[in-house]
Length: 181
Image (tube, rainbow, N blue to C red; front, side, top):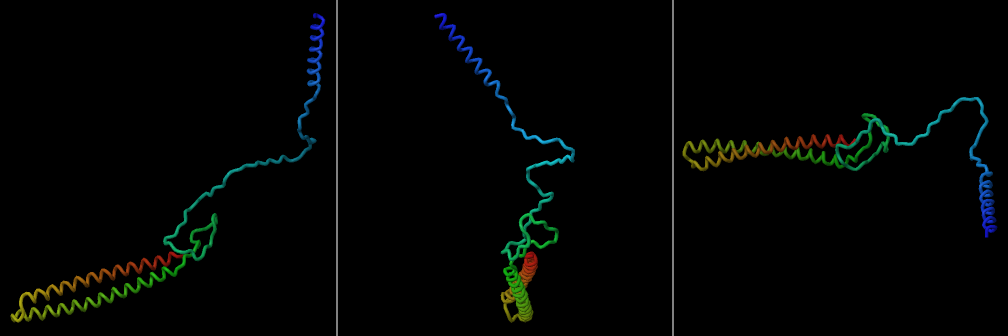
């Protein structure tokens, strides 16, 4: 039994020695490229990734809304102050401008009509006062003539205010038409 045990120990030692020396004899050769040393300029190159950002970014918008007729720039285009970026379709704004002009003319005509009505009411009041002085009409008829004059004057003031409003609307529509560029 001793012989078998001794034989096994010798056999195990031989296997271990063989494994140790067989692994150790393989040389590790790194995968490196080499070049011969020469004289020359040193080139310094840097590679980088990132995002470019503009120094100044401006939000651009339109004073009025409408259908774009012409677009002169694209996204990220360089523009300077005063450059035309786009043109809106002016037809709607031209129509609104003509409508504002017509409203102004109508308002002015209404003021003229009511001025005539005020003159007529003033004439009627003067006649009524003359007739009331001679006691030819009642006090109620005289008061009705006074009320008619005050009413006509109030209507004329309202029409004059409408003229001012129509003028403001006309001005606003002229500005809106200019903003289509």
